[in-house]
Amino acid sequence: EFDRVGDGVRASAALDTVAALARAAGDRATAAAALQWQGSVYLARGGHGPARDRLAEALTEATAADATIVAGWVLFNVARSAHALGAQAEALDYARRAAALLERAGDAYGLAGVRSLEATLLVAVGDPAGARRLHDANLRWAERSGDPWGVARALRGLAISAALERDWPTAQTLLDSATTLFVRAGGPAWRYTLHEDQATLALRRGDGARAAREVDSALVGFLPSQGAVRYRLFAARAEAHVLQGDTAAAARALAQGAAALDAWRAELPTER
Image 1: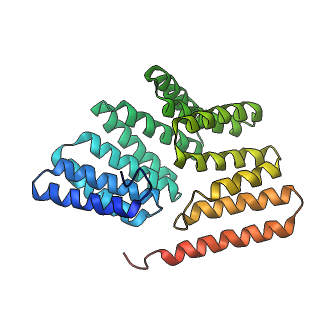
Image 2: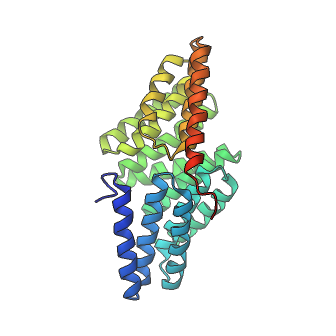
Image 3: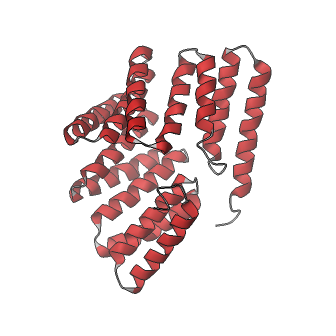
């Protein structure tokens, strides 16, 4: 419940208690699940260091308990962290390992999620055709399963693929459809990511005014601890100002982006 309402601090504390009780009872599978979930909570707040620590503990417990589904989700979250930190080849390796475990365990929902990430990573490493095949497969699965989140996620991926091919009308149509489904399904966290997607597409289409609006809508959803994302958004805002002929505003946006990175850097531990 704490995680659902965005209270990451209390969610993490509650999961600490669950993991400790499970370990005391010798229930390593439950301990693994609690630690995996805790790692996910940290990731949502940009805390990659503590997230990776919890996920490493979770993998140890899951392996000992032969909890294949939990191990798959652990590797899925490690892949997410590596992707966010720019280690795309490492992330792809973890995503593929996660997919193998989740497929073996019969977790269709988890498999669809990790396949979506895998498709994103294939784009990052230069294989857009492979990405499109995965998104198409995910879309068919989600439609058969009646999963609106899965449909929206696949449509977003296909929109990104279309944008990479400079098919702007198709990309816009797909992204608008994904946005409508995400909003209808009540996913507040995804709303901000979709605003960033819309900003990126607007920039590629040369619409600086819309891009600036979408960036401003996205920025409110990301914490100071998510400095890399905030820097990326301020850079997009700078590009939007350039398109509008306002280079002074672009310079201010870049300065704000640099400040966001500096603030994030100041929060990072100097030793591990």
